[in-house]
Amino acid sequence: MENFSRARRAAGIFCDNRLNPSRKESHELDPLNTYVLAQARLAKLRAQ
Image (cartoon, rainbow, N blue to C red):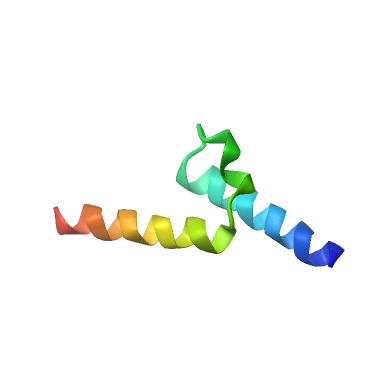
């Protein structure tokens, strides 16, 4: 379980750095949710 939480934390920090460095709380979000939101944001940008 410790490995899972460490992986989650690492993924959250990774998502935070890649997507929105100014958002400090995003490491608390579920990384998968962050990924899905990022995909939606990309789709929106491509649609413009």
